[in-house]
Amino acid sequence: MSYRLTEGNKVRLKGKIVKGAQNFEKYLNGKCFKIICKDGMQTEIHFFQDDFKHLTGIESNLSERDFYLKCKQGLISTGNIRTDQKYDWSTLRGKANRIECIHELLYQNAEKTLLLNGLITHTYVFPVAIRNDVLNSCIGFVGNINKARSLRKAGTSRNTAVEKEIVAIWGRADGSSAYDECVYIKSENN
Image (cartoon, rainbow, N blue to C red; front, top):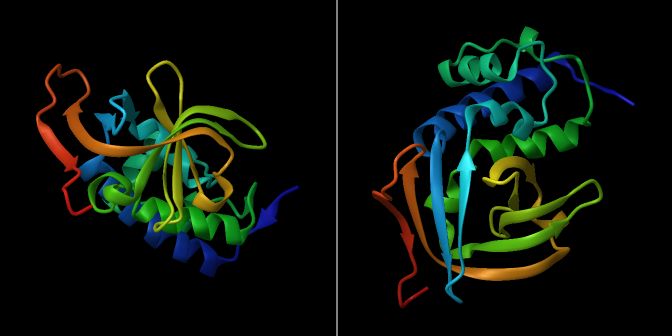
C-alpha cells in the first residue's frame, strides 16, 4: 500500500528535514558516543550520513548520500520527495518532527534518555536503543557497531528486555581513539 502526499505536505516535510540534517551534521554525523549507565555498563553508538534518509522514512528519487547532502545544504526540493510514500502523512510528519531535534536525545534532554537493550518491534529486534519519553523519540541501533537505523515514537518503544539510566555520554569523531567531548554527565540534582 502506498500513501499520497500533497505539495503542501512535501513543503512541510522539506523544512523539517533540512533543519534535521543541519542539526545531524553539527551534532551527530560521523561521531561515536560512549554511553555509560548507572550500573557501570558501557556501550558505543554511531551516526552516519548514509542512514539519515532511512531515519526520516521519506521515499525520494535521491540516493542516501545525495538526500543527506541536499537536505544539509537546504537544496532539497519537493520534487525530490516522492508523491507516493510507504508511510502515511501522520507517520511522516511525526518522523520529520523527531528528525528535526534528533540531537536533543543526547545533547539537551539526556537526563530523560534511557538506554534500552533488546528493543522488540513488530519488524525487528534492536540490540541497543535510546528512548526519551519527554521528546517522544526512540532511536534503534543495528549492526556490530550500533549504527542509528530507526527513529520511532517513544510510546511504541516499550517492549524491551532492559531499561538503564544513563549517567554519562562521551563523544568522539569516528576514527579517533580518544573521547574528547563531554556530552552529558548526570549531576546530583538530576
